Image (tube, rainbow, N blue to C red; front, side, top):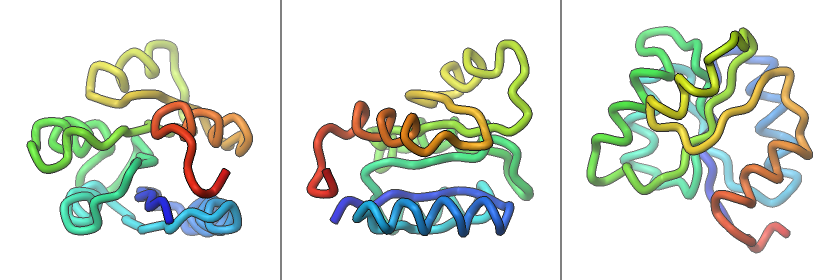
Length: 125
């Protein structure tokens, strides 16, 4: 089962997205802030990370930079997510180390396409 780390502080967004990913056959790890994201990425070794960029404790920008600087985690693709999409945010996310970027509310089929583009075909289809 393909493991995805979902980093999202908003409970409603987190629950909705994690349930939809699980229904598609993904094993979903959860983190609610950037510090937890670092721990979960190191311990859980997900195939991909969905990173909310606006997080408490440590924001998604800094968490992404730290993950990409960590030899144990730098290979894990990261899709940055933001509800406050401003001009230049996609470029800023890519500079921070995200492999792709998407806006919220999430278009689930589009997000699935990005996930599969980054990790290839999975047993989830």
